[in-house]
Length: 502
Image 1 (spheres, helix red, strand yellow):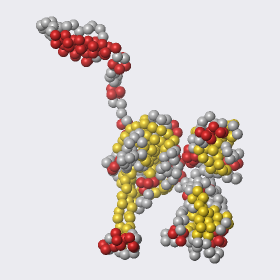
Image 2: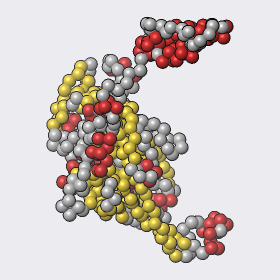
Image 3: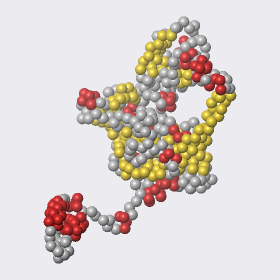
Image 4: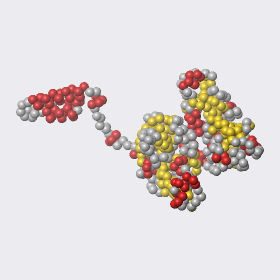
């Protein structure tokens, strides 16, 4: 005869105990020692299962067919057709030397560019991704995908190919805007989402063409926002995600759960060239600003505040009476600039632009760069222990004085350098902070005195022979005098260099 199954509790214990009891039932015959041992084991296991928390013991089946078929597929169907492959082709010309001069012994004496042999052309191809953001053929990708390209092809999801031309290539944000001619046909596109609405933990999808294997979708979450310590571009303000991003994904779409574009996948942190769960995307609010400039044919111009500052550290916050280290401590305010007219002073701390906190200078630059020229904004400022609001109108950086680009020639150390007058507009254009006045070296020609002496683009000429160089005309005057050796002072990457040239 069989042993009766427990009338209560066995369902909670689960199928494991139930099956064990079936296995231990002798069916016919008498109970023997082996069976007794098995029953003891089953009794102990059952006791452990019955005392486990209910949440750990229950497995809930899907309650409806809809729950069984939950999927990202509808989002991919909506956004996927707007993601394209970008093929950039570049012709590289290299001098072809006779076999004899390829010997390392000769290269030591003649160098790599000795004038023997002809030119050899080689075609280089790069592969990336792009996103159609307007039905008339406006495509966004990364600047580094199309940099230096002689021809660009966009391949749509239906395998049609279009030659693309560049509308804007902004190296400072690593964003490029392309246009393909559709002859009136409307293409599938992804609408912009508001990247400021993202929160850490939100689900996102990354769409692109990793490693050239074909269109691929990966999922993940927003791991962090406002990453400003990643030195990828000048405007450092990234969305971080753990959605797998690999080489070839550059320029692809990062979309939210409504299928809206919230970022352009740009870079990864990797030790082996593959995804390690740390990817970075340019926020859509920055991308939208660049696209609007490209679509209207306007030059991309970013607002100018007329100030420079540095991050607020814990020590600075304690000294100023701030509750926590946040904001930008103002170091210099340009006379007559927007900040000066709004009453901003050296030593003030900018805490927020509009409703967005500002954690450091990179965040401040991003918040301004996503606003259009002419808009009025409100800045939250901490000054002398009090918090106040400052309102001002965003203006384009002025070109005052005119740049007056001049190529220097003659028998002097700066021969071969092209110089210009610094202005807020030129500072914004060439992309370095700090000085907005003085004389800057824009270009140094190879094989000239300036190049041999180590002058570099971006060097600011402060003084020559003790005379301050305020304008290009000051430099022109001194290089026109007989040269008997110079004492020069330069500023390079924020450091002052003193040079003596005999």
